[in-house]
Image (cartoon, rainbow, N blue to C red):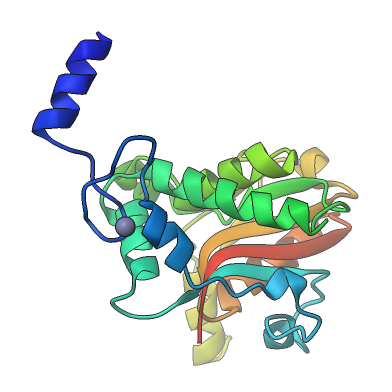
Length: 228
Ligand SMILES: [Zn+2]
């Protein structure tokens, strides 16, 4: 059926997930120009620990790194939009693979045992069909040769009332309630938490806390994008 795929490509040419222009032969998901233009942070090469600083005083993270700079109406936002809202899990895998190549070349992650995407609520995952963080973890795993795990944790809605807590704490509890579903998988492991975009650190902080409370040895953070 190769000829049929070919025909479909001619009638409906595949377009770049970043700029929308038709792809030429050999290009997959993203065009060569966009690939060159992606605003890489190169945080994995920089010793100034700009991202780590965001976690200081909150949670002890070993390494944190983000692939691309996120800004509104940018190609990066467009790519992440395709991944999250346009049923394009393959965009997450591709971005993970691309970043994994860079990280591997820099020797980043030699001490990381497993990758875990930040869990999504079950309902949300069902609706979307996948967890975008897992797609990225899968891509990273492909090129970094570090296994990724999807069954160690989940995110649940907490309904229990928290009347004694402050308004802020109650808010946090409703926002991010993670549960460990398989302690053995995380025990004594150095885990890299994977997510699409780092905006505030609160979600990753909550997830890291629960991993550490349940016996994981160390956490690091890898995201595809970082917002100012
Ligand atoms: Zn493009």
